[in-house]
Image (cartoon, rainbow, N blue to C red):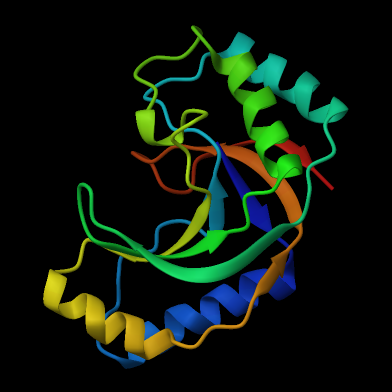
Length: 167
């Protein structure tokens, strides 16, 4: 389940992707710039309906992508980390309350208490290329991303999307 951004924020992230391309680091990009709230192998239809109802009640905040950062747990990733404020955490927690016990194989990385909100710029590159990637996009300006859509993307079938919320 992901949040996608307004056109200005989308363009700003894509400009960073272009800088990575120019540095010879064109990653796979099957999805638009986004922030992931949850990941699971299956989110049933009834749960999706409950998510739609919950999203109608929530005030989904703007997301401030402000820190260039890296992950190296499973594979190397260069990301823009989001400011983790109370509003964003409240939305994340509320969505996970709906998902709890109702999805198959939830990813522990996205559960409350573990989640590190971010927008991925590059992933799956060898460690030596991470320095090149960092230098290609540093410094970065803070991006204010207005959430225009929350949806479920099928990672096995890019282009398949179930929209839960728009504004």
